[in-house]
Length: 315
Image (tube, rainbow, N blue to C red):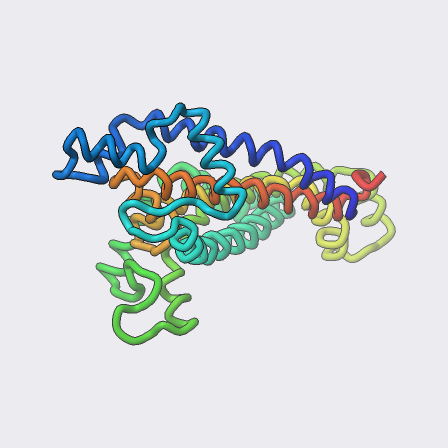
């Protein structure tokens, strides 16, 4: 297992390097001049030229990339133009809020998706299977940002039982219970699409496993049905579902960008939207790189868990 983890980490290095190339050069394609955006009304030709020189934007793109990469390897992501603070400090502060939202959403969609998938597979063609499949298809089809606005309208505006925005109450609160109340709407909204994907794949995997000979043999020996389902069939099906949960973790992180904007959640997604509007390139580059690296690490963790659960991969 240790050797497998080391090998996967070794393979992740070129992926992360490729991410730095993509992130850096895509940001250079954004129209407009960063120095002009930063200076605003003071953007005279002399001031723009001086600021470009200070920021290193007058150098060739390849040289700019390697300077930026070497600084990142040293832990220096640069300084935010709009916030006038180190990029890494802003990302660290915001990313913790995003991890809370994404982690809660991932736990929620994994539990609900697995339970729904197992239930619909065991009760195939029953009324519960049809109802859950119908709800799953609706959840996958609805845009998350529209669903978020609908939930705000229902639960915060109409019924007034849950807060519409923020991470904590403006006055008072600030404890764990306050966090859970504010987390409920955005985490649920963010998890709905992933829940549907996990539920459908779990159902398909369970149906395939339940048709295997060893499952019929276990039932023929008189083994309790609950043990057949959860000890044998579910574990075998979980091997195929774990990688998809890892992929959904990446989609949850990506979806946090617009969900945080809808619910005014103080995470890295909302930070990226604000940084793009102010042309704060270093902040955008650092934020996107951290999110992409987290996506890679989530998939790496999913591969390790799958390797631990599937005895065929240990040979």
